[in-house]
Image (tube, rainbow over all chains, first blue to last red; front, side, top):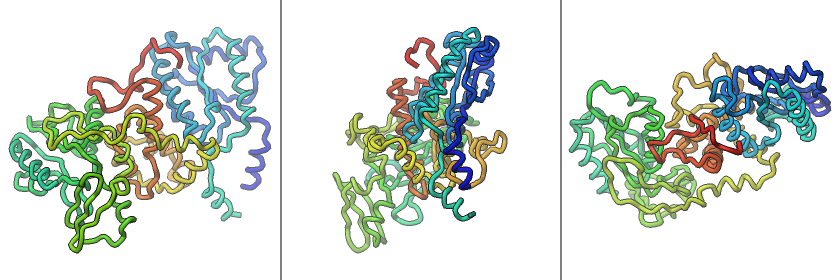
Length: 156
Length: 322
């Protein structure tokens, strides 16, 4: 436990989770790759069918369990493959984004954005900016607290 | 208060043959508690009471116990609602969990309900209580020996101190007279601001400390009139498995986030979650913050207009800035 704590504070690579919609942003990230744009390496991408699939709790769970940042990206509003998925998503995600600071989680650790599949360059820009923000904030220790520390103490 | 109880009983008796069941309150296991009551026979109507101890939100039972959306005969369900309860009822009607036509709603304007835990802290030796009623700004508790008087501010539940809707929003019959709310709209979110004065790490510490007490009894979920997933609550399902059975802070924290996010834009601030919490976690604060965000962002308040739709269940292509 002691070791893992030291590791978590000294690790250089941060871990970010990206939820990308299948039809636009996943394609956009692919375009960026095909065009050989330089991108930060600390984003792990999860493909979702549509941002309408995006349960705000995915973000919450990632942040509570120690992801350093969460990025959600989908089709531009009015360009959704399923017509309205991202209209639902943007309301839910904006509410979540404003709510996180109340629970003590920095609002910049979560970002949602819209990138279409032809916008490889925009994707490069978004992901670079996001990575810089997260590196500025440093590692996220997630939710822990005294009981965890005590439980760990009782083991060692 | 005596006469309101009588009126309640009399009015229900008048229409009882058209009702299948009456949901109200009756005296609980001691005189400081009221308990929900399901009355199916006319001679039992005299068990009904109305006093400042009737704190339960009965709308919870409409969906969870009675399944009020499906009625076989044309008999209705009679239900008593306070101001806050009526908002839950509106929200349930909006989301089509109950139909307005199957209900006979008796609205009771409410001056606040008593938090017996606060009362017992003020006067630990309180026993043999015979009657409890509100007189102006004071609560009178009559015991066999003497009458105690407590300032309302010290014994009411948290939700009642900032209550903006003491009067029922929908009803078929109103018992008593409409009253003016104690709190104005700008006072509504005062307790949130206290937390927002803390820095981010301090807020996290505050919630870690509060939520660490949680024993995950799920009482807050069970008492919530709008937690309607019943057997499919993702806090308990194994597939999908969102939460482990492990007892650690991450799980507790995440459970409360599930409850909060599922109620975003739907919560009517009836305060039941906080009232039933055995370890007194201020859960309503979380819900209130979400309501404030929804109010500012999407200009919507839950449980006011039966015609409207909760904003997170719909969308508007024309909106800008999000």
